[in-house]
Length: 316
Image (cartoon, rainbow, N blue to C red):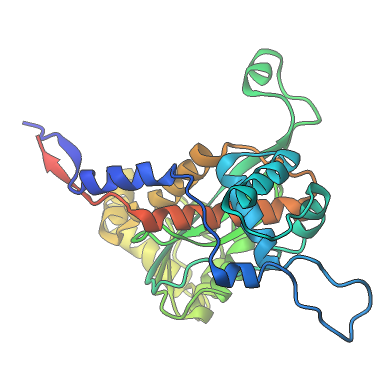
C-alpha cells in the first residue's frame, strides 16, 4: 500500500497574522529617520551636493515596490503621508527619484546578517518590455521581447535572500556563482545548485571559499584521474552515483542522501518574488533596474521577518 503524504502547517494561526500584517499600511517616521532624511553637506567635492540622503531614496523605493506605484503617483503618495502625520520634511520629486535610483543597489552586498550554513542558488527571468503571454502564444515572439536574468542566493532555513544579481539574459548561472560565493560569509558550509553550476569554475570557487558545492553531475560525467584538487568533490559525486547504480534511480537516491531537495527553496523564493511584484521590471535603464530588484529583495526579507510557516510532512 502506497502511503500518501500531506504538508501541514503547525503555526497557521501565527503565520496567518503575519500574512495580514504584510498589508498593514501603517507608516511612521522615527526621529532618527527624520534626522537622516536630508543629505549631509559634504565639503571638498565638486558639484552641488545631494538634497536627500540615500536612506530617504531607499525608503521611497521600498514603498514603491510594496504598493506598485509609478513615480508620479509615488511622489503624491509620499506627500500625503507626511501631510497626514504632520511631519515637516520635503519629498523628492519623481525626476529626483529616478536620477538617484541608479546610485543604489549597484554593488554586490549581503542583504541579510543572519548566520547561515547552507545557501541555495538559482536564476529566473524578468521581462523588461515586450508582448504579453497571450500575444506570444497567439502570434509568436518578436525582436522587441527582452528579459533580464535575476540570480538569487537564498538561505533555506530563514528563506531570506542573501544576495541578488541582475544580469542580461545571456549571462550563464556559472558565471555569476564565483562572485556570489566570494562575498558569502565564512559560515557558509554548503551551496546547492542545479546542473548549470556543474563547471570547473564553480567547483574552484567553492574550494577557495572553503565550502562544498552540491550539484548533480551531467549524465555522461566520468571520473578523471588527473583532476585538480578543487575537482575532487565532483569526482566523488560521480563515484557515488556510479556506486548506487549509475542510472536515473541512482541519481534520485544520491540527491536524497545529499539533501539536494533544499535547492527547490530557491524556486520558492522566485515564485514569492513574482507573486508579490510581478514578472516584469518597471524601470527602463539597467542601473535603475538593479536598484529596483535590490529594493524588492529587501522588502521580501522584511516580510519574512513578520513570520514564516513552520510545517511538516504527515502520512494520510
